[in-house]
Image 1 (spheres, one colour):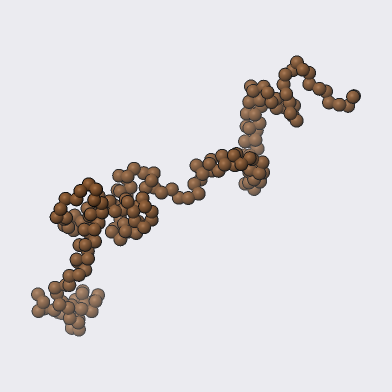
Image 2 (tube, rainbow, N blue to C red):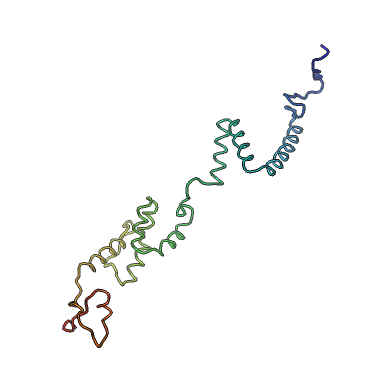
Length: 198
């Protein structure tokens, strides 16, 4: 037929599918054409607006197979994590303990409620021993290596003991001035120490 497209000659050996530009079975030429088009697509993408880029990305994702979409999801997860990364799992344990050492006891107890890993770290004896020794609170036995949280328990016991004991100074209402000035304790709580208590 006079108007039919010419058939490729059998000697050429190149298969062309819907394009005269992309040979399918010649790896070297195919790779070269792909790299040229990839570079051209990159130049176009750089010139597009944000809205145009988003439309192209949506179009490409719609054309992708499930495995290709999973690959894209892994690439995005590596670049833009959807959840915050727990620094205690990424940093060395010594560095995490150093960061936790700046926390007060109440904050450490709150950290123990975050996750199992944070609970493990925030109850380590290395943290609580320093807090006990700062107040001069020592334990009267040597814990075994398998005992954990001994220093935290000791800290809690000592704080409870402090709360149970009453102040030894008897307090009375601050109704009169001492040498023309109100006692600092009287300003704050309305009570001053009784002179008979000392």
